[in-house]
Length: 144
Image (cartoon, rainbow, N blue to C red; front, side):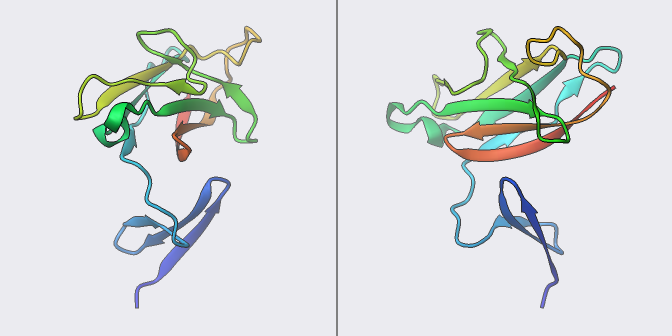
């Protein structure tokens, strides 16, 4: 019998086994083939780039997946909504398109400012939440 660790997040219930694998619990469907990658930031600048991939499966039959990306502080307060690189549009319920069935890579940009306050985000840990067609994935960002 393998020992398992249960994690209850505000985003769902996950089961993590000893072998390092993670799967959906309670009969939930697996997440779509989306791949947020670790953000890239400049240690001397609070701006950061958040790359992510969306598989071609989500674009079948002309479907345009709806994407949202939000950055929260550790108190779960909304800090910012990054912009999609190349379009300058905020990633807030934005329908994406992809010219190939192989999927596409995208990149979001956060300038390091808190919402519309004009103030730079303080150093610390932030969480970004990527939602594609209702499926959520979270990762952390460290701002120095």
